[in-house]
Length: 336
Image 1 (cartoon, rainbow, N blue to C red):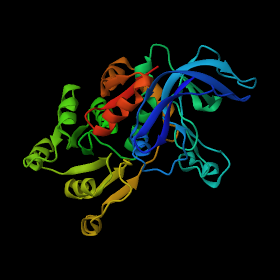
Image 2: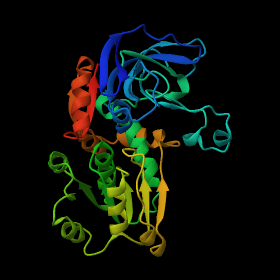
Image 3: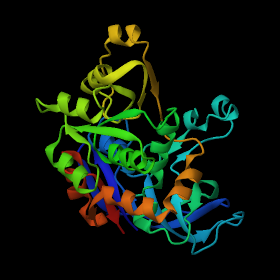
């Protein structure tokens, strides 16, 4: 089978590999569509301690072509999305119901071969059947959508709230589409000009180029002169934290879900004096069920799929990663 293999920083190549063998409780999935995520870009840039060679990727939808002898609920021909964070179910955190922070987590494309390949083996419990009528290009967004839903659930939203989304990349765009569907007043800030234009083109109206001199006045206008009740930070660096403390009202809450930076400086004075709450949010915890229910709604899925702006063949993985790293795009996917 063909696979996109990470060989080192900024070095991905398509190689011919043996298709994986499945165990008794596994299914073999033929991948149809796979998406590039921000954490994939971290790996690509050499920001993670990864053993090479490694097949990249963790967002994917495909068709089951083989089932293990002990598989009970899936059959060959089923279309499934992969849940790529495989928890152990035995560690302290799993036994406390916090599988999202499992101590022994196996992560596709990080510490095991991922989904940027023609075939991938998946434990039955981590392959979710896609509802009838949901297209592969919508289904491939279920994994990042679950990340977004987990973060939004950490907020106690009311109809009058203002929400600031920092970062208009794929995660920020998907967050905006969910809040748009919920009819919540939100503003997206972004510094890459092509992304600002793309966000507006896909129907997200309240987008502000945070690098422009008039950005503060524009944000204030969209919030009717008030500040944000909540901030969702999809970037997570010193600059985004400065935006958070600038725009979050006293007593407000920020949820940090971006992993584009490993270090960020925090201003202690506004944090303490404003009694602000900062909370990290990683992956999901039962949110696949909600995501799959949500993408069945055609009016929502028609809007969500707009965040896919570029499509590549697997053989073009180098070109795809170059574009995704530039930021001149939203979601980039491979079509296999």
